[in-house]
Image (cartoon, rainbow, N blue to C red; front, side):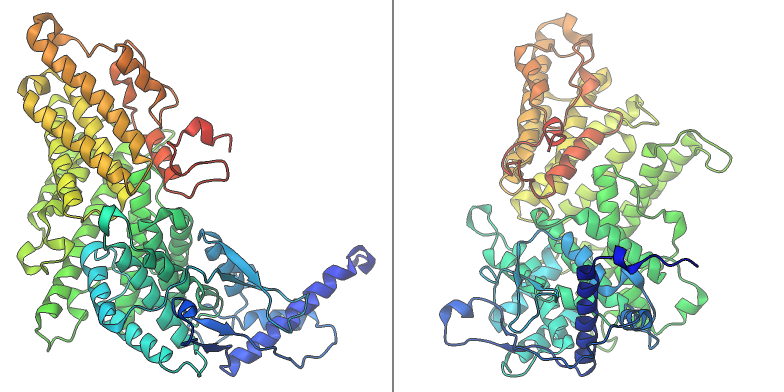
Length: 627
C-alpha cells in the first residue's frame, strides 16, 4: 500500500493532535483517581453568594511521555470514554462523549466564555463555561420543597422524566454536598446539583410573578446547571443518565424556547433512545430489574412526548413511527412503597395513571396525523391508504372511549393540573379538531364535521381562556397555536357552512371571538409573536361579525361570503405566516389544506432570534428566508 509523504501534513496540525491526546489521557487518569477540581463557596462576599459556585482550578502538572503516541494509543484512549453502563470499554469514534457533549451544548442558546486555567498550555483545549454573572445559588431549603411541589403539580407531570422520590434524594444530596465547601465535588455530587438546578429552573418558571413575568432566578438556576453539562455528558457512566440530562434541558427549553433548539435536542434524544433499544422491549429487556425497566420506559415516553409535541403542533414528520415500538407504559404502582398509603403517595399513583392516559391521546393524534396529513407520492402495495370511512368511524369510537376513561379528577392533588377539567377538555378538543377540520385527505369536510368543528372550537377557546385566567398555561407557544387554529376553524365553519350560520347565535360567536382575541393578547405577554395572530384574528372576526349582522338586514346576503372591503384586504399583508395571500373570489383560501405555513412561522418564532431579527417583531417567512 502506498503511503503519502508526511511532508504534506502540516507539522503544527500534528503537534496540536499530540497535545490533545496527552491532555485527554491525563484527564482519564484523573477521572480514574476520582480527582476533580477544588470547589469552594465564598461565604464572605454578598456578590458571590448570589452565584452558584466559585471554581478554583489550580495549575495541574501531568507527567506524560513526550514521545509521539501511536495509533493504538489513540484508539485505546478514546475507547475508555464510555457512554453506557458496561464494564467493557468500546470504541465510539466520532460519537464519543466529548463530541456528543459539544453537540448538545450547541443546541442550547447560552453565551459562554472561554476560560483558560492557570498552567494550561496554549495547545490544550480551553474549557467553555457559562457566564457566572447571572448564575443563581440554591434556594433556601424550606423553599426548595415548595418548588419541587410546583414542578410536579403545575407544569410538568405530563412529561414525567424523574419521580418525586428521585428528585427529593438528589436535592437532599445537593444541599449536603454544598455544606462541605472544602471538599471536592464528586461526579455524583455534580449530577445531584445539575438535577436540582434543572428542577428549580422549571419550577420557578412555573410560578408567575406580578405583571405576568417570570422569576429571574429560573434562568439563573438554568445557567448554574449548564456548568455541569459538559462533564455529565462527556464522562457519564450510563447512557440513561445522558438521556436524562438531555430531557431535562429539553423540558426547560420547551417552556423558554429562546434558550435553545427543542427540535435538535429532541432529535438527539430520540436517536439515543433507539440506540439503547428503549423503543422495543424483547424478552431479555422484560427480565431486567423492575426499577431499571421502569426508568427505561419513563425516559422513552418522555422523549416520545417531546417528539409528538413538535411533529403534531408544527406539522413535521415523526421521529419514529408508532408501528416501530412496543414499549410498555410505566407502572403507577412502582412509584412508591406499597406499604405507604399517604395522600401524597396516592396522588403520585394517580399522576402516573393520568400521564399514561395523556400518552394514549398522543398516540391517537399520531394516527390521525398519519392518515390525514401524511404526504405520500401515491399508495402502493407496501404503503396502502387507509379505508377512510371505516377508519374514521373507528377513530371516533376510540376518542370517545379515551374521554370516558379520563382518570377521576377527585383523586388528583388539588394543585395538580390533572385536577383541572379545562385542561383535559382542551386536550380533547384539540384532538377532535385535528380529526374534523380540513386536511389534505379531506379538503372539504362534511356538514356534520363542520358543525362539530364549530362547536368544539368554541369549547376549546373557552377552555384555554380558563387555563390562562387560572395561570395554568404551561407552554405558551403551543397553546397560542391551539387557540389561534381554534379561532380560525370557527370562522371557517361560519363562512363555509350555511347550516352552521343558521344554528349559530351572533351573541355566541361574538363571545367566542372576544374570548379568543383577549386570550391571545394575554399570551402575547409571554410569547410576543402571538401578537400577529391576535391582530389577524381580530380583523377576521370583525369582518365576520359585520357580515353576520348584515345578513339579517339583507336577505340576499344569506348565501354570500363576507365582503372583503379595504379593512379586510389590508390583512393579507399583515398575516405573519402567509406567503400567498388570499384570493378575493375565494375568502376561504386563507385556510390551507394543512396549516404548514403557520407551523413554519410558529417553529421559527419558537427559536431564538437571529442576528438580524428583532425578538419583539412579528416574524415573516419572506423576511426570514433572507437571514
